[in-house]
Amino acid sequence: MRIGELAKLANCTTETIRFYEKEALLPPPERNGANYRTYTQGHVDRLRFIRNCRALDMTHEEVRALLVASDDPSGNCESVNALVDDHIAHVDERLAELAHLRDQLTELRQRCGTEAAVAKCGIVQGLTSMDTVPSKPRTTHLG
Image (cartoon, rainbow, N blue to C red; front, side, top):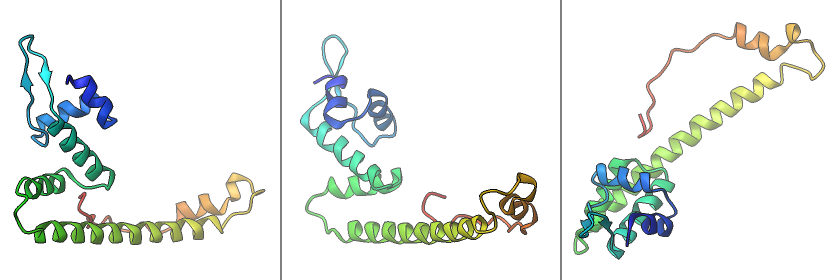
């Protein structure tokens, strides 16, 4: 099959396919006599695997590690479990960060009524007078 057909089957763009090939997540396809890429069912399956990992917010390195594991079907799935456990921990961290952010925004929103002039807006005043916190390095797997 050609790249357009593969893109349709995987619900992605041809640019996405080329990107995954460039990143060596998707193996390069064979070329036919007219030098067109020719994809197989194996490409479809691998691309779906990659796309599903990305839909779960996994990094390319996590996807790569899972692909390495899946390329050795007789291997132990301990590394797969560890990777998913680590990813769950990253999601938990991000959820905590987002909950804290929500709390800050809620507290800020409570400072202002709906009819105040902007000059007296509690949100604007709060954003101006709040202490800025030093930037901390992100602790999630995305950096």
